[in-house]
Image (cartoon, rainbow, N blue to C red; front, top):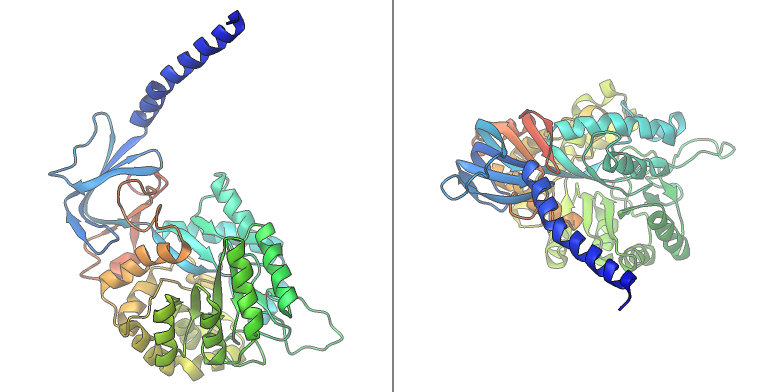
Length: 435
């Protein structure tokens, strides 16, 4: 055995012997203990007088104070009178949206550069509201991918972003800009794609440039001109191709669909979730239960378009569309929820809803008939399952990300307490309160 080989073996042994002690020392200095009045775990249970131990970016122990011992030398955050919860997850946001949504006109007046600036502003508002993760539902120019990278690198504060890039829509459909002269070339609000081959190519394109999931527009919408919310957009074959190609590349598909045959076709194609689902029927709900398709109801957005749409700058046609389906929407969505269709929390946050995401909880209780616990689970356990991050998020349990929020009092008695988050920790780092 040569001297050089012996030297390498000795050096490797010394390094390996030193590593555990070094890591242990680093972890010890990064240990935080959080105490509170109660913990809503995120699995349907509640722990009184909890102690949560965080080391690095993970939870290492959580339980009642009678069973969890705080490590010596740990930083202690005492949130007396507060309730701890898992960081909330909003599964339908548009962090890159402009401040006053003008419907189709947004694509004419703004660029992807504007979208990136708005994302930086809105990401901070969203995190401060207690939402430590979001699933983006369409952004121009992959601005959501850029924002995700900036947050991950610590350049700007914000939630964990699961990006979609531009939504896929058909020519003349909900993701296009309609009603103008054919002599004027206008951009779509998403990527305009037609035909099975076009869908396949666009899915691959989006994955190449960072999409964590694919957003496809299966029916007409509220903010688009010239279509009805229940009008089908893509063909059955196009929808199936989107789902199949996305699955081949390890991605899920989220489908904008208010109702009608387009919603049914999207569910049958195998999408992971129906976004909005405003006019879902009992038969469609049964099909969603059978296939495990989530419904993301985005309650707050349409309620506010009906109430304050004109004041906020929404175009008249959009306000009229919203008013036309508002009452039936409440009835249909409540029936679907009570029938056991899987629901996941989502706001469709645009305009000034960024930072007010927590108001969706009270709408779920009022409109769907959800209990406060059910509403919380939709934004924790169920949202994590929809995105595919249950191993890391959705509950305050050992091994998961240290994404933890707190509110004063007991939100199980008053769900509106979730609108005023006083403490936010993401990945073990305190972003709000508790300092």
